[in-house]
Amino acid sequence: MSERDTYTITAAKSDGWWALTVSGPGLKRDYHTQVKRLEHAEEMARDLVATMLDVDTSEIDAEFDLIVADDEVTTELQATLLTRLAATLVRQGAAEATQATVADLARRGYVHRDIGYLLGMSHQAVGKLLNEAEKSTAAPADDAEAPSPAVFSREKVFGLTTRDAEALLRSCLLDAAEEDPAGLRLNRLRALSERLRRRGQPV
Image (tube, rainbow, N blue to C red; front, side, top):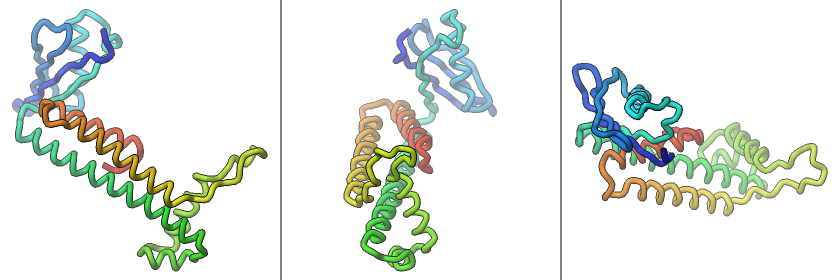
């Protein structure tokens, strides 16, 4: 079985349960099952596929895309996930720009309290950002041959921020292409949100 195989789970509300319809490679027809909570849908679908293919669940190396059988809900979820992704990019860019500016002003001789006043933040927050910047550029203490820490570059950070944001937005736009089925767009947006969550960014 190819690791790129994808099974589709279509979920519909049914008297306090979720009725699931599972379709995909190797299945002769659509199969039906149910779960109480959507978080268990993939596990249930994986078990069903393994049973129908007469293999162990560990052999099912495939993706499972969940689609809510309600076009209005799908559209609403897509809009919300896109908004949250955009907000995450803004927060990430603001955080990196702030740290870069704090480091630049400190290098120019500005004291913590003045930096804080100019940026509308506490001097303690300024100190924390500078400590984080120093840790990220510090050379290993046990490496005598290691080069001295590089100066924190505002231009470098802004460039990285721009490239990262553009890369993620390009990915988002490609993954949520209008020609894709609504359910597929939704699952790709959810996957992007999960990627950001794993990177420690609130989504």
